[in-house]
Structures are given as C-alpha cells and as structure tokens.
Image (tube, rainbow, N blue to C red; front, side, top):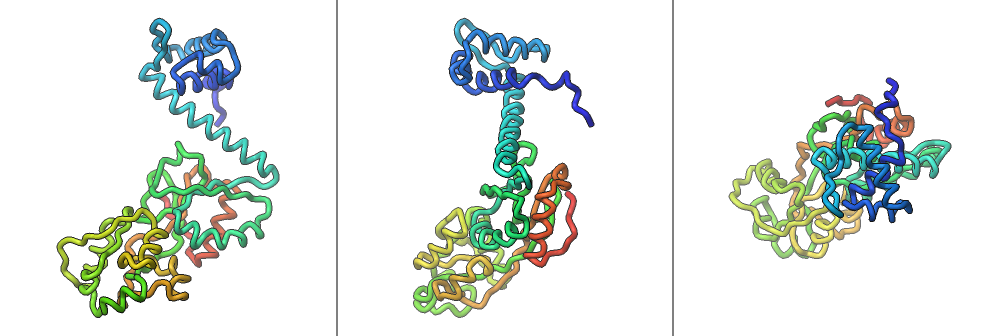
Length: 303
C-alpha cells in the first residue's frame, strides 16, 4: 500500500526536529546541523504547521517538548535510526543484502559464531551484523531483522522457528567434586551454587526433577553462562550449564559433571522475526541454513 505523501514531512524538517528534541535546544541543534538558529526555528515551525499542532513549548530563551512532541520525537528518532541502518547496510553490501541479527551472548560465541563461516561461504552476497540481547524486545523499535530466543514459544508480533532443545548438567572443577564427594543431588547443597540472573529458579527446578526437597538455595549470581562456566572452572562453585555450550571444557577436563544429573530444560531455542520480514531474502537464506545446522523442523510457529 502506497504511503500518502501528506504524511511524509521533508527529511530536513525531521532531522532538525530530532536534533532539537534530543538537545532541547534550537541553538544546539543548529550547531550540530551546521545551520543558523533561525533556520532550525523555521524548519520546526514548518513541521508544526504541517502537523497542525505545536511540538515545543517556547518560554523566553528556552524550549521544551510538549507531551505529544515527546512521543513524536521517539517515533521519529527510531525511524531515522532504521533509515540510517538500512543505508549503512546497503553501502556495505549493495549486491546481496544485510541481515541484522540479535543473539544471546554465549549461544552466539559458543555455538553460532564458529559455524557462521559455513553460511557466509554458501551465501557470499549476504553480510551478517550481530548484536547481543538478553530478552525479547519490540521488533518495531529495534533495527534488527531476527533474533535468537531462548524460552517458551512466545514473542508477541513475531514468528518463531524451533531450533533446538537443551540439556543442563551440574558442572564444577575436578577438585571441588573430589573434595565434596558428591553422591546424590542433595550433596550439592554442601558446595556453593552458581546462579544465572536470567534463570533465577533453575536450581530449584533441577532439584525438583531430581526429587530433592529444598527450601532456599543460596549462592553467587552471574549474568552470563560464560562467566558461570569460568567461575565453575575456578572452583567458585557448581553451575547448572547447558551441556552443548560446555562441550570443549568437558572434553579438556576443565569442567566435570558434579553428579550424573542431566535435565532437559522446559524452554527451547528459537529464531524469531517480525512477520514483515518473512519474505526478506537474507532472512530466508539464514532460516534455511540454521534449520539445517540444528537439524530442526522446517515448520514455523506463528504467535
């Protein structure tokens, strides 16, 4: 559907408004845009006339956004950021296209990054830009095409491809295991337990699956799996870690399983994307490759 031209203010007016809104100053905006203060003032007045309402409250030598102006500024800033990102992506790769992907830090570094060369070799015209995110966000306000999601198959306004499940195991260094001589799940309570901030009830759920009644589980908090793994290697405690993310540490003996207690997580890994990007060729290519790399089903899950 064509966008009515009357709803598309000139870019010069939008840039002047965004700069003035961000700095709360016509003078500062003028300096940033290399214009005169009067020129910025005229541009903003022209935008207000086009919109039919004031964007700023003018008081003596100062200006401040109206409530409606503040909301408009946030929308315009996001739109300009998306235009900028699209332009940068096109200039970086005019022949194939760019995929902006949000990833979970440890999944990205331990699983995805080592495999990406295979995708790039098979798709030489596509560039991938990676950024880290811990939690679902609003695709409309973010300049990303897709995201790796761990959790339940729930992301409002997005579609999901199932990628893989995960099995977590209690892991520590060999010295800690030998010192405490863990024999059953309850024995782990003798040692410090390491907790991931994004999974605060993981240990409680693990003990419940193991049939062990507990009241409170205390220990050190960490915000990433990589840090939890390093803390466990250093002997700071026992961490509950996805086995596929610590395969190298287990193979080298840097980490050992404290006891034989694998548990499959209720959550899963998914690729999420906004419905508006489904037909985007770089995303289609990445979906095909990712499902092949994980051995996942080709079915998507609309939400």
